[in-house]
Image 1: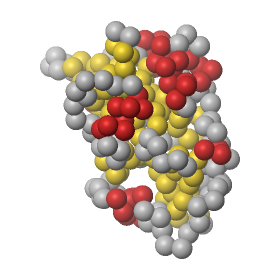
Image 2: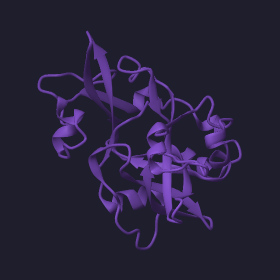
Image 3: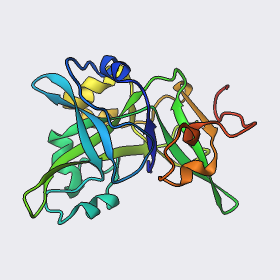
Image 4: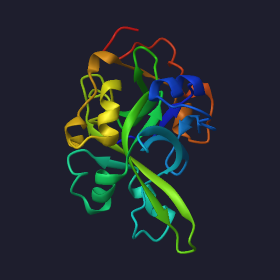
Length: 226
């Protein structure tokens, strides 16, 4: 699964990568973004990419409250197109969740060790996602979303068996508007990723500092050179 990630890139970098124009407003950044928090997503509106803010945790139209979203922070690539909760969003409401990197925990002798995974070139990226404009019983509309996961590549596999679907730049437009979106739900090329251990400060979502993704002292990266 993907249960924690971070975004720290400047607005200008995000705008350039995703082809945003004009005033894109505030981007919800954070070093330790957790389910239930606001995330930055890219959606296609009128043929143009736009930035929107969405609560992480998908709530389907029949959901009774936002707490149901904690059960749907991720959607599996293998079943997302057919699962009733996501079927309509997969057809109509695809998005990109903006990130600089994500965290995963490796089970080592009964203890979970946190790792940070990011692009080797340091650039932010878009994770394949879905969103739904859920309406509460009181009539309040909230954007809720999920991140799609797939099987791990060779860098992530030693840490965890799943990873978010990270899309390369030339695939992002196809995901947002293409008919053959399912074909894009595959592991990201391992040669483009870097993973390394970080301190347990990231374990608590209350910790919101750059220390969350700082390399643990004396450790080496997994799957690639530091």
